[in-house]
Length: 164
Image (cartoon, rainbow, N blue to C red; front, side, top):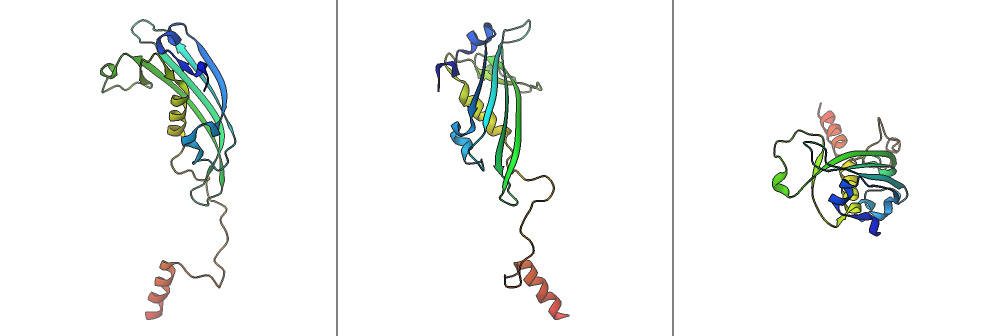
């Protein structure tokens, strides 16, 4: 992690600073286990937005990546494109976060030394599908060969048919 990935929320937003970077998906330890291949890059931009009239300072995060996940139906690699566009309103403490807020942005408590890559990893995990699957049907192996055992329900069905 480099110093440019640790920011002061207030200074970053007040000066309308911007960071743009590309990082390997394998850098994120909590994401690696969900990938079929540890290759791929995450492109991200974090932009500070100064406080406007009747508004608090904000951070705007955009991310995009193409990754290979594991299909939960056929257990084969699945290409997945991920795009995140999130706005965070900065607050002094958690008491400033409205309980019934319907806005499209999230809230972050102001910090002097905020780890941007931790936020990026959190958003990456939230944006990934819980149980990724190929669209439509998967390419699974053909029907059971004659020597393979039947599934439990197929065996029960054959018992039921034998009685009549």
